[in-house]
Image (cartoon, rainbow, N blue to C red; front, side, top):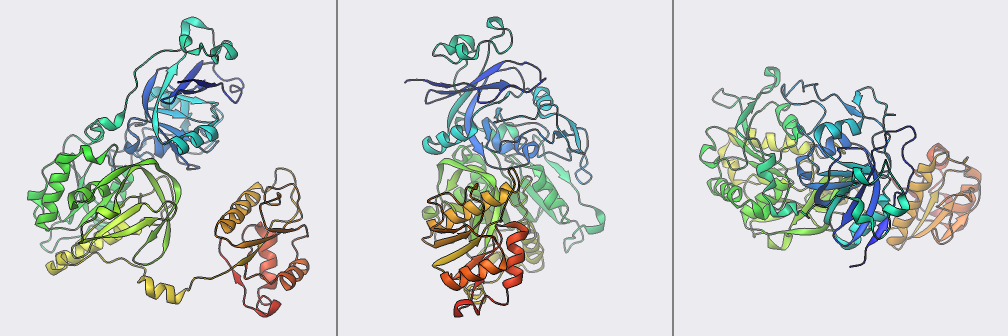
Length: 557
């Protein structure tokens, strides 16, 4: 297999410490080199990418990343440093306040750039590199993460290994052209490939002994007998914010190891079963699946699962799971609730998915990924069991679906008051899909006018150009004829071939009114041009219906 060796695409940090190079070798023979800023060691694992713009302290402590080499696609990494590792959570007492676990779980970190010691945040106590060294985790910057991510998307998640430059062969970074030649291998350490998915990673990250976490007495929920309401949390790679989301809602949480024999205690020692997120292949977890099957059969409490917990619940129900090509890892992934028809923006981190077609007849699909159509949630049709693939607890990411914890706790409370509800499905807020479609019918448009941001200085308001160009691409993918008003020729959105028609006119009420009268679009976007476009929209909002004799829709971004 021919090797492609790509040297660093950026210069080392100015006045930074010279820590040598690391070669990231992919299983397909491709090599990307960069500058070391973490622990000086070589590692191997599964190479995956994550598209979030913020939240690297939370992401790299997420146990779901155990054994994986993480590529962060956002170019700015380390710019807000790392908060204190000693600050404990006010609610959970003995757990760190700012992280999702007590240690970093990724095998290694790949970034395009790194802020070094020039970080800035009121909570920061050290740089990212300092923390990685404390934890023994290697990291590199200067890698073309765009090209690397594209390769992973095309080829699928693959094994990778980060190979440290040998100290004895060079002083510092040495001769980059020599180290990047076909003879590069002799200048770097050698280690074996390692596939983390062949191991029981959950056993590595799960709690060792059961531990009880209690809520603040002021909002503690009580069982009809007077004792506290208790949730048993099956820790198969628990993120701490899932624990926070439960405890702050007034329930005791008994966190138990992955192989804990919990079904016999249902209805006695706990009132609801929660199955956490976690790493690896759910097919490796047969012991846990059997325990969940027993709990399903007994039907003594409501059950809620997240991420790996979702997959384990599905397998316990009789469904199958499969490995995805490159998974879903990011903070802005849309998922549609099939009960309400509403779309939620979610945080995700998974490489396996439930096969919807394999669900038994007494289970139904609850959420679906709006991008790739993969399963994102399931619900039992006549028992209080449900689970989701995404992360409603966020950290990092949007909190749009944190209400699912309320759904779970409310279901527990209701089943304690009325045992008959153990034979009824979980109820979700938001109405029924038919009702919602009637209240807010889908707009059917064939021609859309997009208002740009008007004249811009170089380097100013680039986010409007980016968001507007992405909106135009999305509209064209839907077969919608797109008209753009933007006087700035030095933008991406005015590039030839993007919009179907471009008016290089000032974004003012006068010119927009004339374009509307002539083009007669079905809808108008005023949310991709900053205050300029919004002000025009406000000025013309009472005129839209009269212009061209039709009703116009101001579509949300």
